Image (spheres, rainbow, N blue to C red):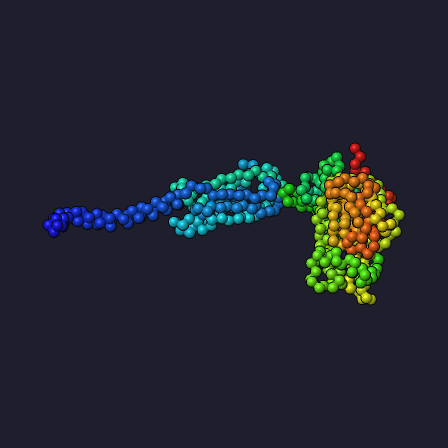
Length: 472
Ligand SMILES: [Zn+2]
């Protein structure tokens, strides 16, 4: 056993030497191997072949007199090296941006992996005229590819340079309005405009094309809010595809009106009868008094209901569905009027003040309610203080509203003829007795409904102006 082991030791001298040699060689080779490995890793990583991503986010291919060109460049692997944006027009290339991005070191690539650029562009300042042109974008990354020049993304986008603002011709005239009243404005634009309309003070009424044979003619109903006096300015405003905007004043006259002041007694009987219906709608605190609930209903809920109305009334069909004067609830006595400002009295003290934006008409209980004129039902449900409510779109921004109904007999989308029964009067919402709260709205603005019951007013102020332009 010993000998054998001696033999082994003896005979093992040579293999031991070989092992040492391998070990020495290993010491020499290992760093080289590691170096080659690391170099290979970096070579593989830094030689990546994914070109930068380029996203041009133009809202339209039309470029106007002044704007920023939004461009997002991204290169997650190597980082952005260089972005060049040029406009090519009539064979000439005008550089709009030539930006080099910083490097974080040869092994790391670029500092910037993603950037959103806003490139200011005013064609005139660069001596560029209107017409077709090409946006040419070149983006390089910090990859070692292409002999160290990086991956390249080239992208082109055809654009239209249009620095001329649209011209506006107001066709309807004259423009006489009453404070709290309505009217129509018709105008012609020199080019297609995605947004145009009439500004009454700061209130915007969108114009719509498609009603007249000439597709360049736009129309909208407009309103003078009950609080907008004779000095309220009026403009037609139009923005073309390239974002060029024109504002053109409308010569007009607003007759001032004063509105009534009124008082309403809020009795405990009324509160006990009505407030339970509203507890949930105003999220009343447990143990809140009826009066607290009432004040929330008359304030917060009223405003929230108006926000719903504004949304419903933000769109109107480009049609004139209606014809002639509007119908009034038959055999009804007028109660509260349009824009009456009411002081709410409780136990002899004024507790609140609100303005009544419609006309109250009282007839027999649960009287059938006719549609004031032809149109499309756009709302038919419960709406807080207004109770069960129906709204009809008569086209071009004109709406009629019917509130406090006890029954709704129509559905949204339904076309109604003038006089067709849409429901029954009632006491839903904040109504103290059976009546119809009838309103006329021009988009989001309440106007005095009385004018719309007057055939002469309608002819002079609306239909004659439309008819004058609708002749073949
Ligand atoms: Zn009312």
